[in-house]
Image 1 (cartoon, rainbow, N blue to C red):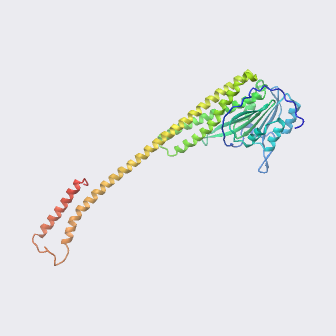
Image 2 (cartoon, rainbow, N blue to C red):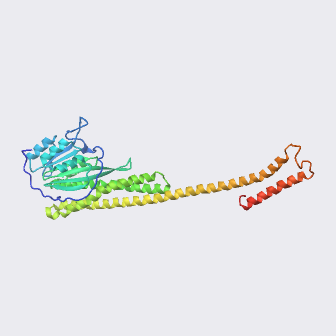
Image 3 (spheres, one colour):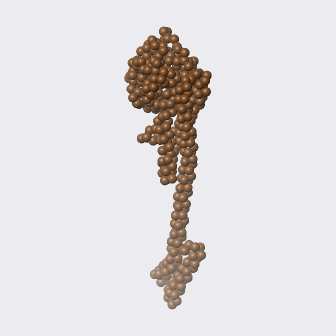
Amino acid sequence: MSDRRPRPTWRRAQGHPAAASSSAPPAGPPSGPDAGPAAGSGAAGGAPRPSVVQATLYRDGRRVSSPATLAETFRQLREHPDGMAWIGLHRPTESELHSLAAEFDLHELAVEDAMEAHQRPKLERYGETLFVVLRAARYLDAQEEVDFGELHVFVGPDFVITVRHGAAPDLSAVRRRMEQDPDLLRLGPEAVLYAILDAVVDGYAPVVAGVQNDIDEIETEVFSGDPAVSRRIYELSREMVEFQRATRPLVGMLHGLMAGFAKYGTDEELQRYLRDVADHVTHTSERVDGFRQALTEILTVNGTLVTQQQNAEMRALAEAGFEQNEEIKKISSWAAILFAPTLVGTIYGMNFDNMPELHWAGGYPFAVLLMAVVCVSLYLVFKKKDWL
């Protein structure tokens, strides 16, 4: 805009970029008291869609007004250059972001990142404006899974713009907390940034507790032989990879901010605030690393147990086959033994006149003796081969 107001001097306490990488898909719709729009704008699918969750102006740590539109917010902020605007957006339209970029001199690369989402956690400086990307997380009890959201924050000399791509975090709670502490809010946009960082990191605690409970259940399922546990281990391992990508970069980002305390004259209260956030995120990152290692070990143990179970089943099948073969040998042996007298009896039982030995006096004893000799001989042979 051509009638741009003069910018006040700002203590750039958070002016250190931090290198990190992460990406995640956007989550679901906004939730919480602050999820309803204070102004509706934009369009999606041809219908109006609320994108501006809330726009508020603050002076000396206290709320002055809540304009209904972005244009009204810009006008009031120009009339009160000593104030601060806090604008919350949820999946804004391109026109809304371009309007904000024109008013607050937002860099086009940062605007493009905020529009497309799917960014890694990072902290970058564009002139007097900081652009921060955070990955929030929440644990869904019903599905027993972790849902990730993406939050983009623009922090300038007299404004804070938050762009949410997902249900987490609930920034309405952050806003209420800041408004209840005017002394902290009076410190300006950098205090709001630290409060948002704290809210994102605090949101990791329920996720850590939920994942710990899942791992305990998985360990029980592994040793109980549940066949579906392998899939659950794999899915939870993938979530922990995403969780690592959300938490690891924050450690470097926060330590980068702390390294600039002296250079940028950060308020002592904010210094303590940021150190506490850094301690929490370090602890969370270590827990997540431990979870991933534990899941890797559990997967290995589960693979070993599955292999042992398969080997036991194969051994049982082999033993059953061996026993079946032994029975077949016995049946075959007795069948052969019984076949010999049947053969002799069948031959001498034929009714033919011209057969040798039909009128022989010793024919009957000879036939009986022959059958007995053949049967005994076959029995001895099979016994020697251990078939009987």
